[in-house]
Image (cartoon, rainbow, N blue to C red):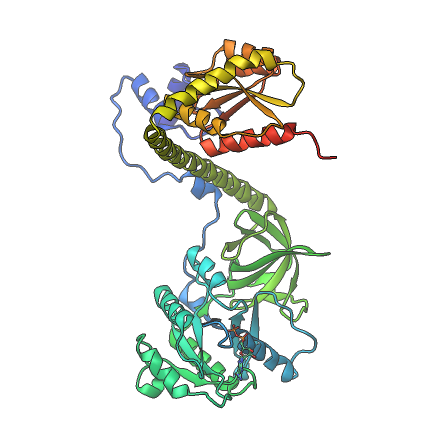
Length: 507
Ligand code: GDP
């Protein structure tokens, strides 16, 4: 048929295109077409998958409507310091124990679920304040569905209350207000509610649509009403997910536990997590070894809205806010992780380079500042160089005086940096270790510099200059040390370090 004819013809033309059944890239396609004396014309074919799409794991698309089931809301508690966030969390957590539902002590794994009437649950993120929440949002994960804003009835709206409101608004997460400490004699819940008006939070009691519950976290008073309010808010949000398909989750906390190893608390957002599942999060992967809940109890399954602590992680620990996706094999998980590690390294290299550029600018600023400084000092500047030259002349005589000394050769890219370096050397006063300037010059290093360094035992310092491979090799052969910097303070740090290494030990 036609295809065979084309292939045979291509083969004859010796283009080496069709070996290994590999896809042919654009360049070779053009070559092949041209080899038939045809004029190539590019048309848009099906979009090619980038290598990232082929290797990396991506969140699944939305589940079909018939798979969706109601899931528990995820709640985070925010508010001003000392208004009772921790006490409220403890009270909520203990309400379970008090109700006799669970024995034993709860563990802080980063989140916990509270079982309510009618079989419904609310999951609370356990870290008060918005640190965890913020990092999750920053990574594009939805940290929580609802924010409980704690406002102390005796204190009213304070700075961090306002911050929390702004934060929740920016994240598009609805608030439920808990006016706390109503047991206190000086409590004024109404005043607290009114002070929220200024920040566009109109609670129900004042004709708005923000639910507000008066509680005493300390006395565990009115907590069921708060929980009911949360369920109502959850119903308004119509929170749904599927228990089917690959698991996706968000990492809430990660740590290394003595005797268990690396563990992560994760909050399942879809699918049902079971033992032996293979998971990828960040640049880490895991075959689920154990799963425990916040009571330290082993669990067999975790479905959407349920936090569990999972052991079995390899490589790095995932970070809070990392998105977790289940995959079908360890092999695939490892491939994804090494792909991501590679990406990370590339990004790091890129940002390092940017940092260097920034450093360079800083150096330039420093230089200009120095330069101005030197100019301001007029005459003194000229004498600095003379002093240095003068010192340089003294070197020969002092070579074998036996005292500790640091000998230096400098090569810099521009005169300004050389001036700045010399100026800094001028300020060196210590008698314990002599600083000896063997040579300095503007311009790239040469073989002569390496030889001079060898003869005098000096370190060759380069500033903002490339070291040609040939010179590097020569230096290695001659055991000459070459230090390369492009930020002055790092060079000075290096000098200080060299000096301290040469100081006689105190003992
Ligand atoms: P956080 O900084 O918001 O986590 O506040 P804490 O939970 O640490 O509470 C700060 C202080 O307020 C502690 O001394 C608590 O005992 C106290 N506190 C918290 N809730 C109540 C309450 O409902 N009533 C009273 N009287 N004190 C409370």
